Amino acid sequence: MNKKIGVCLSGGGALGYAHIGVLKALEEKGIYPDIISGSSMGAIVGVLYASGQRPEDMLQLLRNEQVFKISKLLNPTFSATGISDQKVLRKLLKEFLPHSDFALLEKPFFVCVANLSTSEWEIIGEGPLLHEYVVASASVPGVFEANNIGEWTYVDGALFNNFPAQVLKKKCDVIIGVDVLPYYEQKKITKKSEVLALSIRSVQHRNSIEGRLLCDFLIESPAIKKYNEFSFDKYEEISKIGFNTTLDYLKLNPKLMKFAK
Image (cartoon, rainbow, N blue to C red; front, side):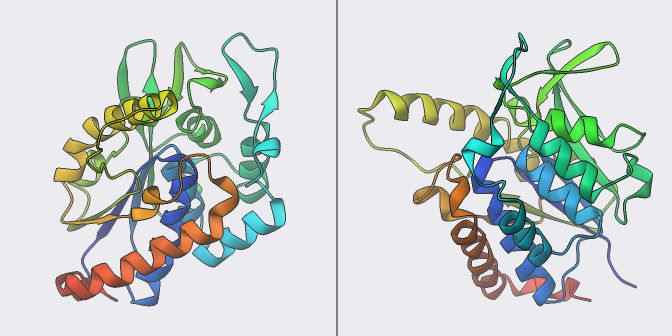
């Protein structure tokens, strides 16, 4: 009897392109996740994967749509809640997921969002508002406008829970976690930009600990050592790092191979 495999994909901006490489490497070794959860960029990659898009299809999508360009991602808006709307992401979702219902995905998918109205994170996995929740999960506060869904206001899921593995615990036999924002100890910090970036990463790492501990296997992408959350034009390189890291991880953790199909 095949075991049910869950995969949790963390947020991390452009560093989340590593998820594509991780999924590609897992599939090449016969490991096909059955259930997916994700926050922010992990939610975007996760919903595409759950819809049936193969990892190589996602890379081709990036090449064709050129959504790796900052100038294309940011679309100035007059909204009072952000400097840009999510026009590009909404267009992508509408094109590749014409429906907006969780039930019509090929694989169960759960997206984490941050509810600013209640100061709680929520994991959504059903209903007809798939597009809205994925957009909300990837809406960095202050950069992209906030999303009003029903009576609540939602923003980036990574704000409160960057690693939503909790929902997989009772649904899967094994959980594979993929963290593209592993925290590395830093020496003395001397730049203002580093203080801000590391402060945000620290918060996201702290709110990821619970989810990380729930994983049976945890793959950490080291792309963060060379690139950052805004290195969107380096999607090929970051994805390749995720791919190679996973192959190395499988060699060091052969127990994971017993879940190959």
